[in-house]
Image (cartoon, rainbow, N blue to C red; front, side, top):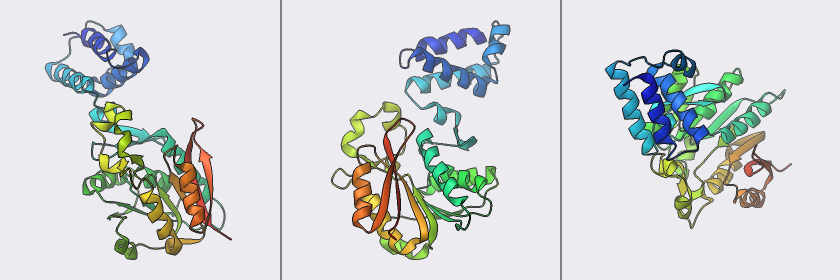
Length: 285
């Protein structure tokens, strides 16, 4: 098949699943990654015959995309805070909203007189600590995750970006594990927060491919991670430190109330889409 024939096939097939603009974007990025061909190159040379290996890679990729496999998993890469990160189904695909959480951490750490010890709870691909480390010179980053597979990906990303992170495999919900953790100026987390009853509301490309352990919590205890983080912070948040949390938009008020009830002073911050998605907590004066 010629390059333009596969190129058109991509659009025809993907438009049965996605809007045209999204299908075009997926097609163009796939061709750039798997065939090293830009849209302009295809226009200049539409009759180009692709070598069998590239044709097979593109057609195999199309078959996976038709099963709604996320493009980031197909290509093995996702961009976050202007950096490329290796991803696999062992880790969540980094979201733009989480970049806002990182921005808050960076702004806070840049303030004069503020310490630089940071704990990231549930690191996944490592996008949060690596992005902070690249922007805050001398920051001391510790990142934990229950998944060994996720930590392996995070360590690869840290090596790629020449960042020294203290990665630890840790089940944060087990309080006896807290003893090996220090005191931090910033505690940051994008924990699991989607109740299991909401699975059927999510797109298939999320529920079929992204790690459920990083997404879902039991319906009867949707704030479990926030409760544990609040308790952890009583002895592990440094004086004048801050806790930065991503939340479910429907639970931000409850998360803020939870922290207030446990002796913190908390505020809610909306994301770029005007949704309540972040809670900022500090010790009460």
